[in-house]
Image 1 (spheres, chains in turn yellow, brown):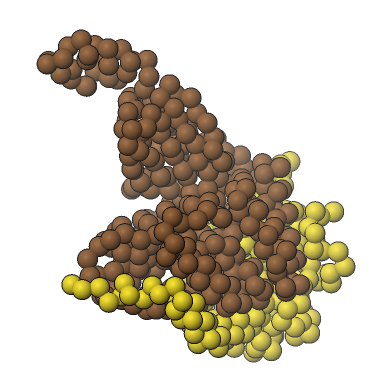
Image 2 (cartoon, one colour):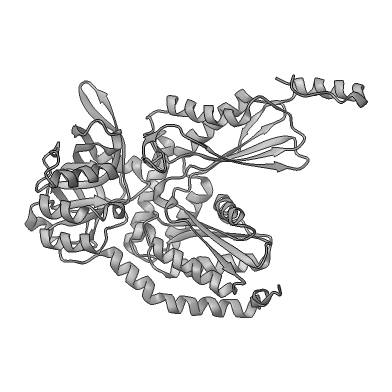
Length: 222
Length: 313
């Protein structure tokens, strides 16, 4: 059971996705997630992942073909299992410098987070057959209900939310396919739309300023 | 703890009376320490009422189906946080406190330390625990305490016999998009265009719908403080200057015309409010802009001179 008001009737997907499943998803699709996902909110964690790809050290968890979420988490131990206190997405663009290689070289089929990813990442998603799921930020009580338990962690010298952690999800979401495997990005679309509207918006602001006659203050004398 | 205060030799009788009053009526370290702990704790598990009302109102106006669903999800999550005593967001950020001290009050003890210790108390006692977010800016090492933590901002309330404290946690999600630019003799159009640049730069990464604070004029530091304080204003409150009221309405309309929508779902609600304040300055005009994410975490309380604590929100 989930108290999410949104999950009724939404398609459910099992993580990790196959590459074909990833390619079938379209930007704007709302889905619920089950299955396993690796997660971290750490910048230093991403640096270590790149080091591992460079042959400097090993990845503590097998990430190949998996799902990797930009998500912070806090867990507690109950009868030998690690149950979630809470999870929440973190801003993915912080990891833009690392993600293209991680996606390509590990063959990741889904990335999750909030705020989207940059152009180089979008190209990597397309090439690898990988989608980006956007999670709602700040809605931790509902999002956390979709996390069953933490299965394992790596790089335990890092603080809890930076460790590479593997979670079991059930009824996690809803999440939005915000970047699909065909190069379509909801973020880019919205940015382009806003940039396209900007000249009109500025003209409307100018028109709104005029009747009030407040522009005189900008000619103040020294 | 009043021993450090020297009575004036010229008016012994008056002083004695005042000392008696101070013994009886003083805001103590212990009261402030507990207030600091409680405020931060409350703020993490409740979305303020004005913000919930604004989300509900936005839901009524919103024309995009997916944005309406997102606003529903947000409201349900906010209610769950309060009802079930859970964190609204996994990122507790760091606490910032705005303290206004009545000039007719007596303070007893180390008030600055009370905030440091109250923050430490919260870290020790809150359930579920908060994660480490206090970050050294150069080494990026993280812990539960640090230099200048929590961030304190003091002001006085002339003639008042109480203290008001507002706590507003700040985290990276919306914190990283704040910006400041210093103009020289700007036209209002330039200021507003800069505002829109900042809005487009942040896009939907700051967890919209946001509350935006704008500080115009004064000095570099003062503009930033005005912007931050403006985000703490109640949504729906109006500025007493009609020129600023007009600007707020204009900027809010403009932000919501961009179409980013709640969490970047492409709808009509990118901001719940734009709050502007200004100060006179010189010909140079700093313009500071900052954002609060949709949970808009904020709590406040009043401490009366007899130590009575009243939660305001």
